[in-house]
Length: 314
Length: 232
Image (cartoon, rainbow over all chains, first blue to last red; front, side, top):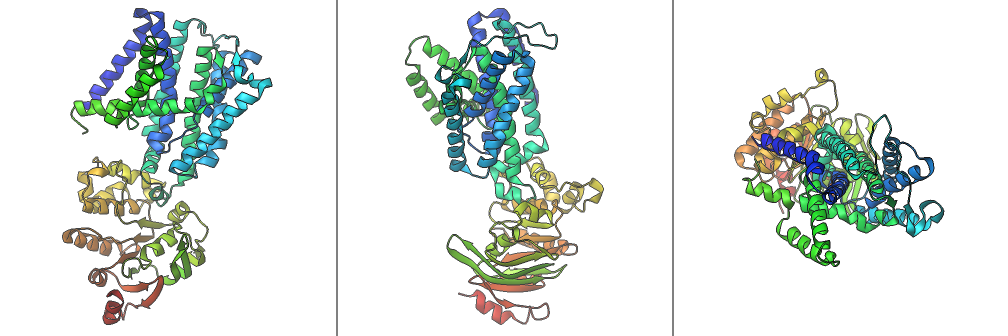
């Protein structure tokens, strides 16, 4: 029964998302694209936070790497977009391998602080290495290429870009979901509970943490590449710690224990942000107060609240 | 099967083990006795590499364990059931078992899932329940079952009776007796009665040292000495 409800909701959501551009104004499609991309970013972050129990404060590093690599490839090589989307996440995954290798040995706050430090290092590189990254101006004005493999999609058309994003995000979420229910995902969840106990079950905990970290970085890089193409710039702020904080907020808002929690959190976060900025430029204060209230009164996020309404866990 | 030679181990500056000596033969059921805080748990942790020995050697089937990481030691065939909350609370009973299953071809398993559920019928009924919702006795049974699916030749049980109802304690005892037919077992306890009933011999640990070692023959006649060490 419960499974049927979940499947029904998911199908309904899919229908709404597919029909959205037909019935809503351009502006809504624009916001929805942003929600999908940052929802993917938050979901990949939650692979570490919700499943491994490790709070990364530096995922902006991988988001930014994906964004810059995509920007550089479009600017200098004008590759077909499909190849940009293949290579940018791989670059982020290489970065995640290096950073993760050093970070996964640490626990709790030490892990968070080290990821924060590495995130800010990537920010500093983006900010300082003017000849490559364009410094504080970032990369802007890179051309949008063909998508490739015979797809008749125009990236500059926001409706086309929305559908492309929807497809890529849906496929990525499906891949991440399959990972979480696989034996690999089971090991990640067990590590969240107790790393020591995982080790004496004969499993090299740190190695699995690193695998999780790399996958998380890979999908964060994909989100970054999509976001750079969507906003037509790659700027240092994309790897700043404030960027790293966004998926944390989204995930806590939506509920870290639920697969779709981060995506729902992204929708609420960006929805509120859009709504409030239409009234005042001091949106951060108002958003801050709302978020504070939600975190205080909904510790398990929106999904936790829904579950309570629907009669608790089975 | 397992030998500890002059094992020292520390938590920070405090030296908890000060030259532990153990020699366990295959098939034995041995109890480590001692009051709270004398180093029983640390001895088991030192064997597993969780609290690596600072000095001395740990040998398992002739292989030196010093310097190996915990998961490597586990894979060599040592199962560990730790004390306190012994399971993964957010995982179901079945998931708790799956995560610990040794990667082996199905026909090579001594402990395939069916045999686990035969041995632990109480777990079969609740296999889809989350660890959060298990009683203390169910948790302990699951913890032992989880160690078994790792296919250990040597099983370490840390205070298997702690906090359990008498009827469960008896079940744990019978389980130890049943497992002893195929597995070497070391368990720790503060309770001499349980040890005498289910172990073949015992070591008494005090201040990080073995102060008394009984042989199989002398275990029951050494009572007075052992009791003297265990009383405050």
